[in-house]
Amino acid sequence: MTELSERQQLSYIASQAADARLNVELETEGMTLNIGPQHPATHGTLRIIARLDGEQVVWAEPSAGYMHRGYEKLTEVRTFPQVTTLINRIDWLGSFANEVPFILAAEKLMEIEAPPRAQVIRTILFELSRIANVSLFLGDLGVQMGATTPAFLAFRDREYVLNLIESATGGRFHPNFDRIGGLKDDLPKGWINETTAVVKRLIGFCDENEDLLFGNEIFQSRMRGIGVIPAHVAEEYGLSGANLRASGVDYDLRRDNPVGLAWDKADWKVWTHPDGDSWARCWIRLQETRESCKIVLQLLEQIPAGPIMTKVPRIIKVPEGEAYVSTENPLGEMGYYVVSKGDLGPFRVKIRSASFNNISITPWVLKGVYVPDIITILASLYFILGDIDR
Amino acid sequence: MGLVDKGRMPAPLTKLFNISRSYSMWVYQWGLACCAIEMGAAFASPRYDVMRLGVIPLPASPRQADFVCVSGTVTDKMAPAVKRLWEQMPEPKYAISMGSCANCGGPYWDSYSVTKGVDQIIPVDVYVPGCPPRPEALLEGIVLLQQRIKNEDMQAKWKGDEFTTLQAKRQAERGELHAGDPTGQSTHDISTDPQPIPERDRPEPIVVGGGPIE
Ligand code: SF4
Image (cartoon, rainbow over all chains, first blue to last red; front, side, top):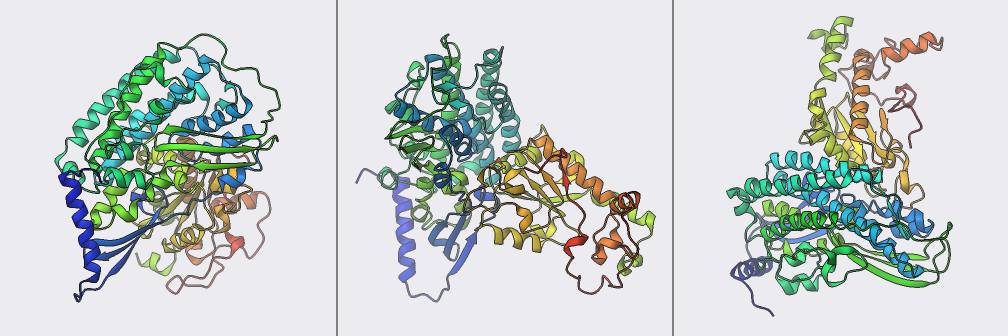
């Protein structure tokens, strides 16, 4: 076992105590608290069943499936270009980032590669969707603690990013812009200057958020030392993304496994935090938004000239084979395992989505916490329902 | 307000009530999927700001709400909960179905786990098509709903004959209004239990943009 910080030890003791309380012969009566499926704090329709002893949770379990839309089955009856329309909607806040790994897997099977210009533009849009995603998370954090102002700020600045995505792709939300072999269109005129201005504005939003929210005393006292996940537990449960990095594991697929996108062309940093508590998870996401802004600013200056689409046949048939590609999406590691039998559509697609693993730790992490902390821990774990249930 | 208690509503009073009702609507946000984010943008963002239309987007429970905005995919597992929420809301209540998924299943029209249209479970007043609809489209849907409320005959609605005067007028214009229909016919008193609303009496739903609902 690795070394534990003081906070981690305390939370470990609390969860042990919660275990022990079940066996103590006191005349108390447990209560089962049902949070959800419709609850403002669950970002959708997650249901948490918690058994309480007084104010303390002794047992908790997430009940997923309220948003199960059957993606994996539906992909079997769609053609390859049609699949992107569906998988856009898995993580609905960072839609473009969902398309990329699937397209990359298909390209891997077809043994083609997008031209450099398309790769850089893909990376830029990828990071923009990360910014759009995480900025809403930062706004939503305040709402979980009863402060609505950050949400207004987030929605205000997020609109600018959505405008950019819309002017480039035509969709505010679900761009469906990525194609096998490149992109659908080139960037519109003046987009680069606009993006530079907006991204600088978003850096300002991060500063504002850090002052307003992260500097707030109530916020700190409700986040610090709550919901601690030690590194080895995080690894065992298969957490990924900021949740993993907040536990001190230095793992980022953008750096460790670059899959034909242009992250290595920019200079940026992978942030980690030793604490592993709710605060660390939120703080990491804030820093990552900044890093994304940096990546976008750097890449905007080095978009190469050239085509945005390689030669692909009009009717796309993917040769027989299997491929797995995963990228570091806003929520964590998202991967597609695509099996093709040489048809128009995939034979089978297995989707590895980040939130499903991230939420699977809730029984562990909710043990021993107090009821109001359930909300903050869930908020800091940051999941999206479509990403859990698919 | 003895008149109201007895279920008799003179026209001026009806008008006053309807205007007040349509500009103080509490909406319960039943955000289910992607559309919920666009609903959030319409309701909570400074750019669209639904409060200027007189809609209050943050009731704590469906029991305080005047209309519900079902936005997103209703799955078969979720459907009972949606129905239950609808039953918890007090009359008069309205429903807006936002997004293709809630309208008819949307991109998941052939999925095994998705309810193809929330209108199978609850009666929908306004459909907002799109995947996701822009926040402006949702706002238009709300404005259309307000117009409907303004033209409503409260007496008839409370008696269980859901019929808007506007619709009655339109039908009369088209010569479709037959005798014995619809307002003032029921002897049912509102002080007793409300009778279940017959399906045929519900007004026709509005579709934002006027096209097909998907
Ligand atoms: S209509 Fe489209 S955007 Fe709305 S919930 Fe369905 S898939 Fe998502």
